[in-house]
Image 1 (tube, rainbow, N blue to C red):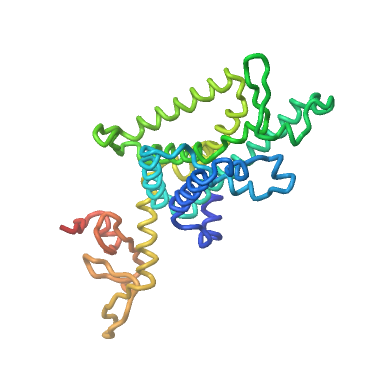
Image 2 (cartoon, helix red, strand yellow):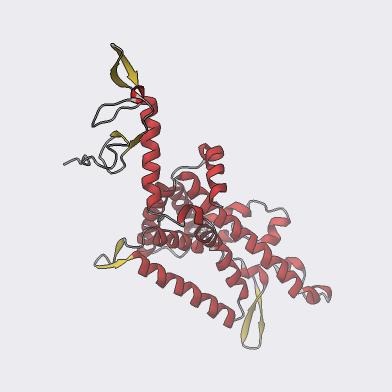
Length: 323
């Protein structure tokens, strides 16, 4: 998986969408505006597989506009928090990997809804044959009364589908990448992110147990499919994350950017055989260049600035720090 991502990034990385976290927040804002104007209009945006296969194909994308929860002051705080951690993940992983992570979560959620759709057809096959339900009635946003209980029909199973669990998968990724980072609960209490990640994982597990106990197996399918991107990224990319922490990935990206920039912009002036020439590499300590022999040069990721060293001084120099 990790090698595949490397290959895909080299080939298609230029097509990655920058600031994807901001785009998601803008989608939520549009959804809240629609909800404020006419809450019933959200039914026309929801992810309903039956409606999709019967011509309402816009639902494949429009469900992303459905807000993860009702608008409140704390919702605004949480959206800003998710935006900030999303930006952090973009800076660490890069735009392409973050795009793959988010879009895979969206695709898996869509696949999960179609799985539920197929199971619902099998579950209610006898009722459809006997004429108790028509398919368009079965997958409408309604239910029926049975005794003292209201039984939701499959159409209602999809009404609550949003990017809520995808947002939670972003936080799980952040907690796995920066486990020792601290956040302030209620702007006062410092808590390590890994503790919050454990609490969130326990909360998701409890939600699935309660859903199964209440007969809402379809909620479990949506939760698992929405979080499948997290499971794939952090259990099948051991060639990337197995020997190094995910937080090291940002330093590697910075190093590659320094090298790329230096190759294009940083010519080194040196004297060779009595002539002044421009070289690609020059040690900041001894001044040797690639013209002085078969010498390898590396940039130091711990120095503030683009300082390049030969292998004799890469590990022995004093790091340059801005005051």
